[in-house]
Image (tube, rainbow, N blue to C red; front, side, top):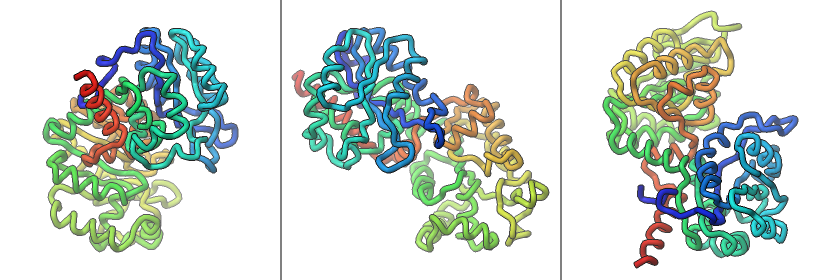
Length: 411
């Protein structure tokens, strides 16, 4: 690891600021937390801190100003308290007098939640770690702490105040979740067991064009399988008339520049990119499947067809490493779950190293109850995508710099 982990840092009886990603899915009507997965994924880090008698101050965000899910973290503290056998308290403050007093009064093994850090006007500013370190939030809290632990891989692509601002001032390291994500994903990028197959699907396509180019260029992926809206976009770029409704669905993200990029990509990597040859359409239910020869189609293309499912399985059958990002169709509707169910179940039952990433992909895996059969479920969305492309993540860069600063200070 190029960053310090909890193995390198003394936290016993120390005051630890722990940055996590507890941006939870909430019920739009009641604002109740719907799923506690993100909290459970951080439990190993928090339990280790508690076992070492650290005083843990949890820093997190929920939503963003102006959004319906922008709430306090009081409920988060209560729910987290049910998941961990340790005292958990909450203070309705971020760095004012009440927060400072609550931190100062912590006893060994205690856990304290501060309020939603995105209530700070400057939290989401994109600045350097040193610039963020000069903010009132960091300047006020840093003297009260001994160690900063970052376990928010899902937010690692953001250069925001609470994510990187402590690193110039405090001994800093990665938590166990961040460590696990970086170790596992680095192995896949740098030295995946071959053949390595990436499957992209879901309802967005503009961001994955560069990702596909990078993983093929870097020889990370040997084969790309496309489903969902990404597949439709690639077919459209190649001149297929999908039908007015299906073409309209591409308009929100698509423009001629993007479709030109897709054509260039296909010209370079035609043999490595597979597209569907048949689809299940919404014709008052899943009553028929159409082939490329049947296009254009007036009905929505809501899933890949049976022939494509079987063809993709043959490719996946040869793989040693498989990366899944995006469901194969509109899996939220049972009638159009077939492609996602068959492909994901096939991967889960295969003796391969499998990685799943992205909110909807993970949701589909859980709905199918396959999570225990997947090798690694990543917590990242944007951070996972950028990491797979080989881009530098601000959180990791800040932790690397902190490790260098600490080493220089020792010498």
